[in-house]
Image (cartoon, rainbow, N blue to C red):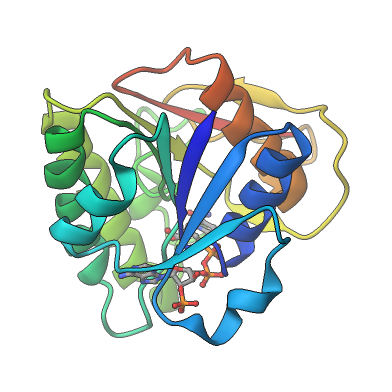
Length: 213
Ligand SMILES: NC(=O)c1ccc[n+]([C@@H]2O[C@H](COP(=O)([O-])OP(=O)(O)OC[C@H]3O[C@@H](n4cnc5c(N)ncnc54)[C@H](OP(=O)(O)O)[C@@H]3O)[C@@H](O)[C@H]2O)c1
């Protein structure tokens, strides 16, 4: 597949690029500057652009099979996450390319809570994370309201950390996945497997899904 990745210098995006290369896909990464262009394998096409710019989204998605976006705005500018989601949806509406959006856990429900959102659980979203969680919630709402783009929204568990590529994890829909010890986590490497599995075998068109151990 021809895959364009926004956020490729980030924790999630970088693993997504590696997983895509491992599976033999043609990867284009859209960076905001060329400073880290040499971080990537020579098989990767590196271009410059912004995920919150519709023209760039159109330009770098044209002719591709899929766009993966895993961008995170700087602290204090959490609303950029919405600008990015809007630009991606507007751009991909034009080019008719699928979107696999890495979102947040905020819009998942807490298990055994009568539907309490992760966003509203202070144990899961402490004050310092509130603004990004609110932005992630709104980002998911934007996708849900969009009927013209073939989007999928992958919500991480509470924690995504560097770790092993095991291929062993559970998949869910709208509820936070928590293990028997009460932990909600996955490695970045396994998270990337989930992303590329969905890329190659779409099961969640216009749906949100989540993964965790
Ligand atoms: N439990 C959770 O809910 C949870 C946990 C972890 C992550 N996440 C979500 O996963 C996503 C990725 O997180 P991460 O940890 O991988 O982030 P990260 O390591 O901070 O990387 C962010 C990436 O976004 C890029 N970026 C930011 N704004 C951009 C824009 N306008 N256009 C293009 N690229 C842009 C950055 O590029 P530069 O190199 O140019 O700065 C960087 O590559 C975020 O949406 C985050 O909220 C959720």
